[in-house]
Amino acid sequence: MEAILNFFNKVDEYMYYPVLIIILAFGGLYFTFRTRFVQVRLFGEACKLIVEKPSGKQHVSSFQALMVSTASRVGTGNIIGVATAICLGGPGACFWMWLMCIIGASSAFMESTLAQIYKQRDKNGNCFGGPAYYIEKALKKPWLSMVFCVFLIATYAFGFNLLCSYNLQSTFATYSFYDENKSPYIIGAILAVCVGYCILGGGKRIIRLTEKVVPVMGISYVLISLVVIFANIKNVPSMFALIFEDAFDFRSILGGLSGSCLVYGIKRGLYSNEAGVGSAPNASASADVTHPVKQGLVQTISVYIDTMILCTATALMCLSSGTEYGESVSGAPYVQNAISTVFGKAGPIFITIAMVLFAFTTLLGNLYYLDNAIAYMNKKRPPSKRFMKIFYIFCIAVIFVGAIIPMSFAWTMADITMGGMTVINIPCCLILSGTVAKALKDFEKQKKAGKNPIFKAKDIGLDENDLCFWKDEK
Image (cartoon, rainbow, N blue to C red; front, side, top):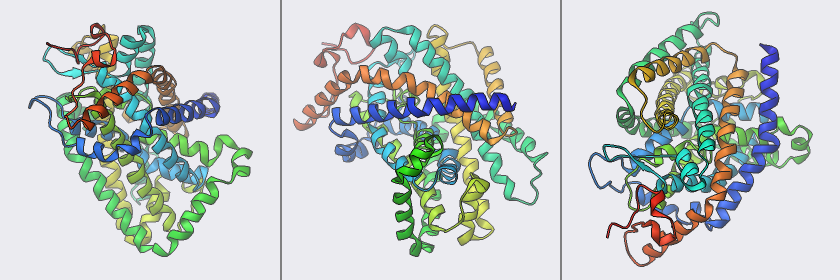
C-alpha cells in the first residue's frame, strides 16, 4: 500500500507542477484578456440572469442549473480542503485560491458557454451536453471525448466520492464516542445507504433537492463564520498581513514548490470551485436560455459563491481565531478548534452538521454528472436500468471505502482524476475560444441595442448542421 501511495503521490506532484500550474494560469489569463475580463465586467448582468425564467415549466432554469453545479462545487472542500491547504501549505494558500478564483471564473464562462452552444436534445425535448459533446462536434475528435468521459467517471464515481466520504467521517473524530477502529465503518455505511436511497429518484429529483438545500446550507455556514470573525476582529489586520506575507515569500515557495502555499492554493482552489475542470458544463447545458452567453455568465457566479464566499469564510474564520495550524491538525480538527474558540462544544457539532449537508449534496451532484458521461459512452443512449443499478451499487461501495482509507490516499486520487479532466478540457476550450468570443460580442451587441439577446448560430458563422439548437427557423 505504501509503494502504491508513493507512486500516485509522484504522479500527483508532477501533474500539478509544472503541468497544471502552466495550463490553468495560461488558460485563465488568456480567457480573461480575450473576453476583456468578462467575469468582472459583466458581474452585475450575471446576477440578474440568475432569476431569468425558462420558456416552459418542464425546462431547467438558469437558477436550477446553477444550483446543481454549485452543489458539486460547494462541498467538503470548502471546509476541509481550505483547512488542509492552510495547515500543509501555509496561510498564503488563501491568496492563491482567491487569484485562481478570479482567473478561473473566465474558464468557467468559456466551458459553460461552449456547453450551451453545442448542447443536444433528448426525445422529450430537454437539453443536455458538456465537454464530451463540444469536443466531438466542434473539434471532430470523438476519441478524445471518450477519454474525457473516462476521467469524468473516474473523478465523480471514484476520486471525489472517496474524498468526500473521508472528509465527512473525519469530522466525527473529535467526539468521545469515536472509535478509530469501528466508527469509520459505521459512518461510511450510514452515508452510503442514505445516498443510495436518494439516487434512485433520478436527475430531476436531484435538481429539486439541491435547489432547496444548497442556499440554506451555504448561508448558515457563512453567518456562523462571520460570528467567529467578528468575535476575533482584533486579529483581522494581522491575519491579512500574514496571508500576504506568506503568499509572497518566494524564497520559501521556491525552496519546496510542490508543498508550497502556491501549489496547495491552486490544488484546493481547483478542487473546490472546479473552474475549467469540465464538470459544471454538464449542468450548464441543461438550462433553457435564449443565448449561450447567459448561462456562461451565470456559472461565473457559482465560482465566486464557492471560493470568494464559502472558502474565504473558512479561511478567515480559522486564521482570525488564532488557533494553531500545522500538519497535526490538518483538515477537520483545525476548523473545529477554530470555531470552538467562540461556540465551545457546540462549534464542532455545527461543523459536523454542515459537513453532513455539504457531503450529501456533493455526492448527489457528483452522480448527476455521471449520467451524461455514461450515456455518451453508450453510443449517446441512456444505459439500461439494470446497468445503472449495478453502477450505483459500485458508487455506493466507493463511498463506504472512502470512509476507511488514509487521508493522503483520498486527496491524491481526487487530485489525479480531476487533473486528468482539466488537462483535456482547458486546451480544448483554448482552441474553441474564438467561438465564445464571437458569441459574447453578439450578446453584448444585442444588449446595447436594448434587446433580450437571442442567439442564432449563423450570426457568428457556425454551421447549423453541427448543432441541435440555435438554428434559424425562418
